[in-house]
Each structure stands twice: as C-alpha cells, then as structure tokens.
Length: 208
Image (tube, rainbow, N blue to C red; front, side, top):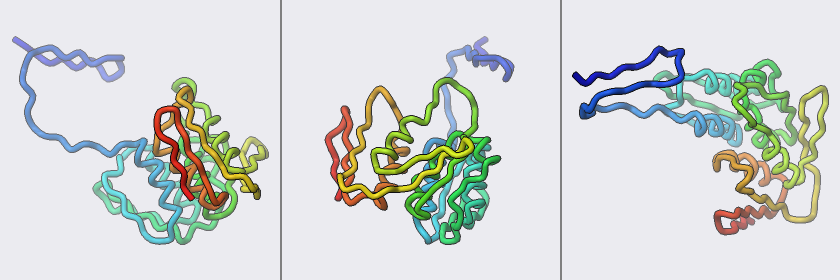
C-alpha cells in the first residue's frame, strides 16, 4: 500500500513514497527575504505603514525589535499584521545585542542614512551558512559617496559631498536580491541628484 513517510526532524531529508493525488488548500506564508527589507524601509516615512502576512519567525521579530529600539512605533496587531510608524525614529546606532542575532541588520543602513544623516552598524550575526559577505552593501554605499569608518568593530556611515553622479553596477558574480538594492537607491536619494543603475542582465536605468 502506498504510504508517506516523513523522516525524523533531525535528519537531512524528507522521504515521500506513494502515488496519491494531492488535494486541499494552504495559505502561503510570508517570505522572510521580502519582509525584512520592507520592515527597514518603513523608517523612510513618518506615516504609519501596515504590513500583512509577516512571517512569525525569529528574524522578523528581531527586525521589528531593532525598528522599535531606533524609536519607531511598532504595533503587533496579530495574525501576521504589523503597523510601523517611523516618525519617532531618533537614533542612528543599532543595538549591538540585537544585531548579533541577525544578518539582515545591515538593511537599516540606508534608511538611517536617509533619515538621520548617519548610521552606526555593529557586526551582524545570524546563521553561518557559507559565504555571506557584506562587500556588495559596502561597495554600493561607497559608490554613492558614503564614507565608512570602522570604530570598535562597528561601521560608521556618513554621506560626503561629491560632484559626480553616483553609479551602481550590479555584477552577476556578486548576486543579491532585488529588494536589497532598494536600500542603496533610497539612501542615494539623499546623497546625490543623479543615480545610474546598470546590470549585465538588464537595461540601464537612470533616475534624476
């Protein structure tokens, strides 16, 4: 008789046997890689932003805690719904202990540069699952004219005046999610009048 066998949760694989048709419905959970940059981007506006279907995971909770620690009003409304109001954001330095829990803390750098004019980002933490360097983030900010100093292991970011337009080149050998680029471009809106974004895989986009 066909049967479905799910291995122990501590093992490395699910083994499914059988030729039974599937039926029913499920509700797709919110995507972490979409939710975390959106939480950070909520600090770019003073008005309330309501997010729905926020995944109930530790990383999302940590990002919300970071936003609240910076001074944003974070309301957990239940059922995956969260309302964030960035008007009260008053700090530019992220909490070191909260940053040590999550890799995505770097996503607050752009909104803080745009809102506060500077950002102090302690070393991020999170799971160690191979090479997950921050070079792409750092190089993008530097191309936008941001000065970066390392003080006591934390990165201190400040925009500096520059006459030439900024140009971001998204290189295929350094992949990163499209949502992450929103962080760089939004910070550019306060640093330069013209930002050029080019990619080997897409047409050149110029925003003035």
